[in-house]
Length: 320
Image (cartoon, rainbow, N blue to C red; front, side):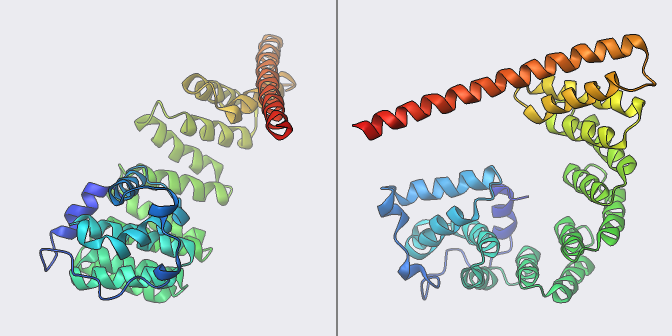
């Protein structure tokens, strides 16, 4: 979880100096970059605010974060105050995702100098090991963190992520279940466990995880949709009826959810053709399927209209 305020507090609390250390050299490769501030005519304050916005939204636009962040830390580090440390962390994670190990290492070294005993920085070191596929080194590092702080949820989650990366889903499931015994309110972990069960085709347990999520997030249309998909996959008249019900609920919560609309059509159609369904049930579901089909067709026509309009606008521009 990359919340700007939380990260800044946890890092600043263990820092060893009171101001950013001047950069002795720019980040690797920064001298070759076209400056974002010049290309888009933005100030360093606007770039800083954009980085904060991406953190708050938990955006995974790694290329943009690297481009903007690299210029900030190479050109404006002295102006950023304490924000520099959270930006180093943000850029490092994006650089790992983007394949810029040189930049990731640079940011990590700066953070190590400032926060030599920080578990958070040690976890970032482990994430770099993961990116390099040095999984054993990463696990050993996370284990050391957990020995010092057994409640460190981030380190436990990184270990589970490694199991997934290695294709060891059964071990990942076991560790996630152990984790949820202690941190039952972690919604991200419940969703991750549901995904793992789906990958292992254990749909009953996946449904249970999604039920836990819907109890705490009754207005989340995506959880309703995914639960409906699991029930649809399980099959059988009872599961299909539940599937249709939750596809309808997802649509009620978000009438633009096209996947739920298609799901409603498919589940109602299957119920209508199920030999175990009563005559009334078949008749009702034929109506539901017909309504869903009409809504799908309507949405399709709207999209075609938009495409046609844009085509005309393009032709008008080209014609000039």
